[in-house]
Image (cartoon, rainbow, N blue to C red; front, side):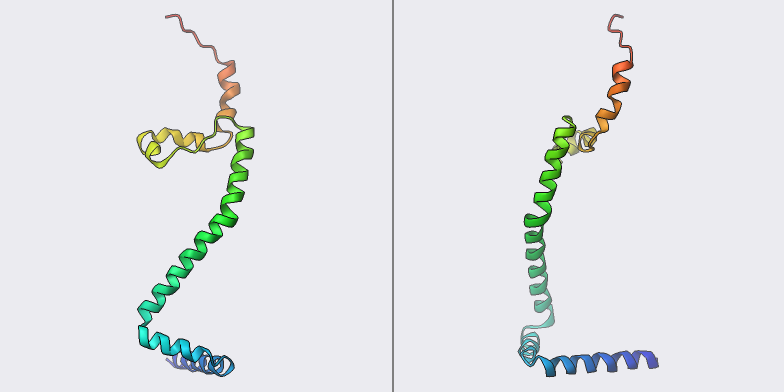
Length: 117
């Protein structure tokens, strides 16, 4: 139980030191007290979602698009079906894996197919 009290004392000291160094945080404390902690956390969540969307648009998506173009040059059978199509035809997920069908090409080319019954 003494460790819990010690942690609270350290956290209180950190908060007091932060308020002494940055007095503009006092207005943030007044805003949180006025609007409520739930609303403040909701605003933080909205900011995080907007930041994550911006990060995806400017960093993740361009890199993924370039990788997709390189993969298309390597494997012509690769395509990304829509979710609705995947729900209807789940075996199309094989086309999302680069090189999946190219790995089977030698097997298919060497196999003997007899169409005459």
